[in-house]
Length: 157
Image 1: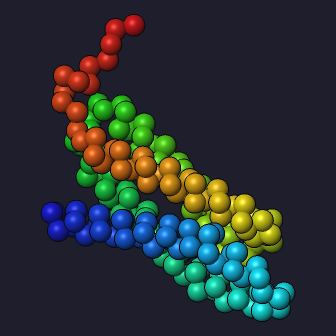
Image 2: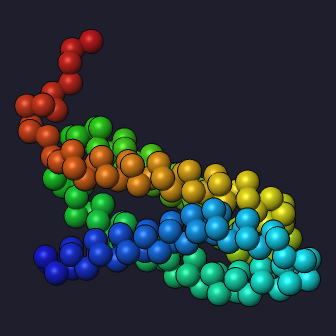
């Protein structure tokens, strides 16, 4: 199973690099640059970028879900009774669902979610901040390691 564990980790981290990096680039470089264009070229550029980026978002969310659940399944046994780990990963998963929703709303076509696209900079900023929090939680949970059994004892009330 080692090769599957390694592959899953590479897929998860590689997907994070691609989607989070692309979102940061869009927020800090592309949107400010595109705002300098006249309306017609701006709209054309936006439509073309969304058409291409949508594929990355949909495939990326799928890869995140598959590799994330597999990674959690593999790690959960080592963290049995480790409430801090499960709390952190639970928060990470909930935040990830919000990020997935925002990413899909920003590349989607639903009229009900058009408000997100009209305020693209605002919601992309929220997405990037949440993604940074997720990366921070992930990094801490990974380097924190597995606490010894005696450290997991709950203090009496």
